[in-house]
Length: 102
Image (tube, rainbow, N blue to C red; front, side, top):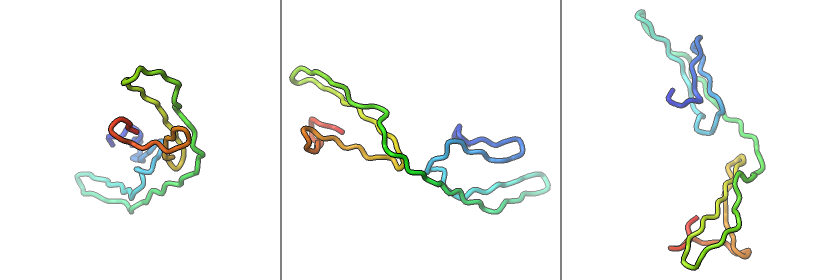
């Protein structure tokens, strides 16, 4: 219950808000009292993914740099499933090396 998206209601119901892939699993309820304990049947949580076209949350901005300087070109995209981000320079793939990190 350390995740703020998880909460236990007064009647013992587990509520999970903003479900994600990591929430998928088998859930069981356990009731305990001085008279003993009981365990519920297992309930499997399925995650029904809807496909969402990728869109950018953050895009690169024009920058200037002196020779030998460092720049950061930010890019962040969301979608379902999570999109991969690739970079190109003059229509050729950017490859990482000791100067370029993606």
